[in-house]
Length: 221
Image (cartoon, rainbow, N blue to C red; front, side):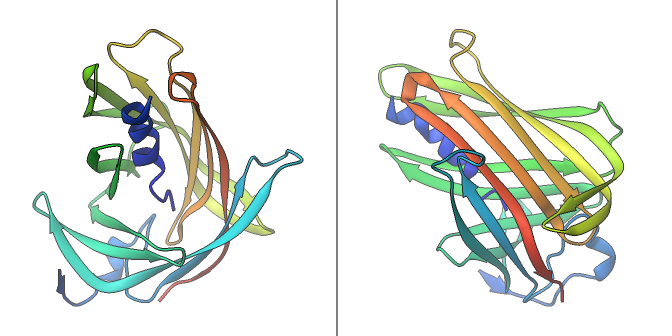
């Protein structure tokens, strides 16, 4: 799961419930939100380098939902602390994350996947971020479908009908090159995210993020 990844990137600019029954299985296509489903991910910082380090993140679906912007989100908890929120509406997959720091309090609702979109299709959303001494900066996330229907091997397991998504981050009002990103996410039916490669550089804020998330195992209920 992309735990606080996009909120952390956006925060860098500022620094330079109720319970109900599980949803019907038919809604669980490229993500599962049924209670007690669990994923174990290997998360590596600076992969492929001498200083690479890996930790395991266990993500568990709670039995609790919460309403956000008129949508019912299922709460996912992380073994290291913190929560993400997920909602499925037809072919659209939403993730809600929160982050705070540097005097900012950000809430980001992201449409991260459209499983019916064709290869080459893209969609964007803009988050307005207040930055002390600068004003409000519009940060735009653009997701594009890179691949569909391919197979991918992750940690020795072959997943079929994988969708690959590329995410670009741009900031209106800042010079070109202020932020560079190379973000790719791979989703498989039922289990959702099987691999995430996240590289973001923001020299203005001394930010250099390079992490890889690989699914180790999934227990789908």
